[in-house]
View 1 (cartoon, helix red, strand yellow):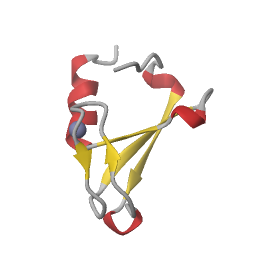
View 2 (view 1 turned 90 degrees about the vertical axis):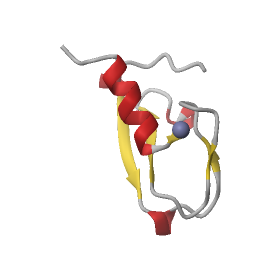
View 3 (view 1 turned 120 degrees about the horizontal axis):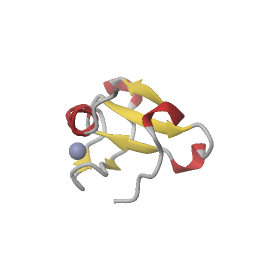
Length: 69
Ligand SMILES: [Zn+2]
């Protein structure tokens, strides 16, 4: 997985189940996020087209691996 952006450069948006109208591939676990599942979108401020959809749990675990100072 290629995710070079530091947390400070990312906007994280929560996607509610009713907003998830299609399936996405989560880069944290490489498994599908089914449509209708609440999740998060991580949007690099400098490169919004490279946004990725993550399971909430995967995003939280990712953050815990790289604790903020
Ligand atoms: Zn995941």
